[in-house]
Image 1 (cartoon, rainbow, N blue to C red):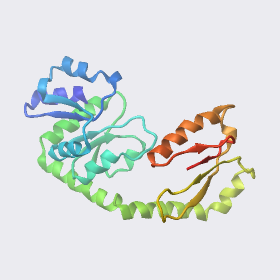
Image 2 (image 1 turned 135 degrees about the vertical axis):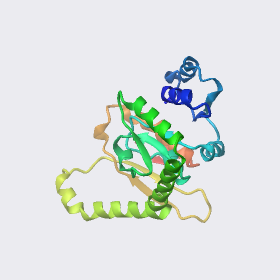
Image 3 (image 1 turned 120 degrees about the vertical axis):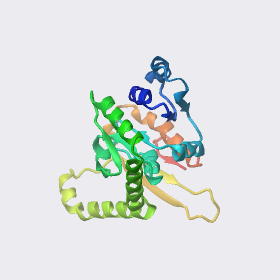
Image 4 (image 1 turned 180 degrees about the horizontal axis):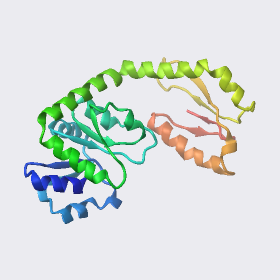
Length: 239
């Protein structure tokens, strides 16, 4: 992105680049900026508070939200960019290819990535009507697919589809009862109903002694929820 922007900036003196968010040390981004001689035309903000990130987003004309590799996750920053009606460039990879082509620009991975980025940035910088058209399509997509009701409906449909397939799926799974890690969650809030939940998980997938490694992980999750986690000798835990 920095190299592609440097070439566009050489033709467009008004262009500015903000790289917002934490920069991983191994990228050597500061050194690359220095080598490209961009001066104050490109700035790495580092981590910023959420509202500052939104302010930068609102002020932008074009956004770049590349992500590779991924685990198939949804990008919260990308959804907010779409919701703010901003044209955005994304990696042409897996889940991002499900996005509507009139709302985003797909950037090929591999040797052509830098050239494709440059071409997109140049085209969008010189065409306000194109930026606005992509922005309108982005907002339409966000409003139709990424509201809370539509997300809840998608979860409902997915669970219903799996539930309806349970007889067929059960026939594919060996009839083996997994050994479980039981735990109990008890609310600390007065008047709130107490509940028990059993987490089923086979220990066969863990190496000998790996159970000990579960303790700090569960503890961090419990702490994040505002509870205390207590382990019994048999690895059972309670909140």
